[in-house]
Amino acid sequence: MSAGKIEKLQELLPVMKARGDRVLIFSQFTQVLDILEVVLDTMELKYLKLTGQTAVSDRQNLVDAFNKTDDITVFCASLLLLLLLLLARSRLGTFMLTLARPMQCCRRAQAASAST
Image (cartoon, rainbow, N blue to C red; front, side):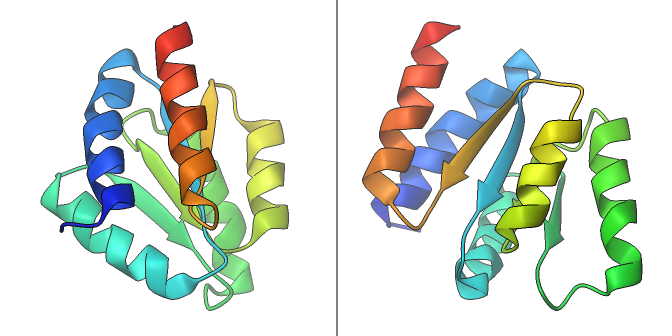
């Protein structure tokens, strides 16, 4: 893909994964998450996705799987409240990339990468 946000994410995710970082991606647009699924599959990164379409009975299982499984690098969500709950419960350091504001996303991710 030739979108700047996607290219930056493709650059940052391998570095973050190598450090053992866990990445939380929020977008209010589920279509963006659908595109990210293709990107993450292409990059062969393990991820979970939670949207409003995810069955309520499955949501806690997804959160638990992310918190308990170190090889799942990315958690994508369209539900900000649930994402914040996930952040609060996570036992590992996390990064939140908000794709609704792409320039801030890239600056925050770059700053986080530079500080560690």
